[in-house]
Length: 191
Picture 1 (cartoon, helix red, strand yellow):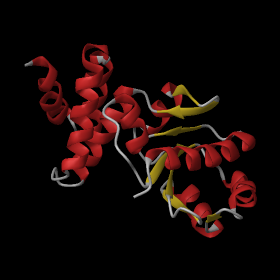
Picture 2 (picture 1 turned 90 degrees about the vertical axis):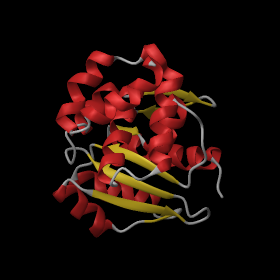
Picture 3 (picture 1 turned 45 degrees about the vertical axis):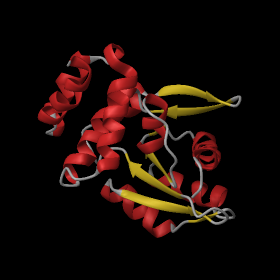
């Protein structure tokens, strides 16, 4: 399995191309949850992007040598506010680009993103509260059966503890339909 360092290296390559195009972005998924909670390895990278149709040709040109990417799929994702993916040729690491606007949480994640130094380079990642909400949302969408998603949730709650902005969490969880799951997750540190 590819380790998280490789995924971060690939994420930096993609985010550098996004930065060069002026595309605001933030990394979520297991990379963000590992930074906010308990580290684990990953073979994919989730990035919320404020990608517009005019950015797509430049992104394709910047990444096509090292990644499999489909310009038509990227344009469709932009139009539909959905997602598209890139596959790194050498490592097979998958990058999922989630076009901002597809979830009620997207704009907030972009506005609240945190700068993290990674070996002298910068990654923008979801803050702990937003990755916690995202993980709860994915857990719910997956039928509440994913041990991995729930472990990520519990890891974030345990590591962050009282530093979590509960006012923000309680205001956003009902919008995403995960208020009950948030209560369950926070009970880990409250008990």
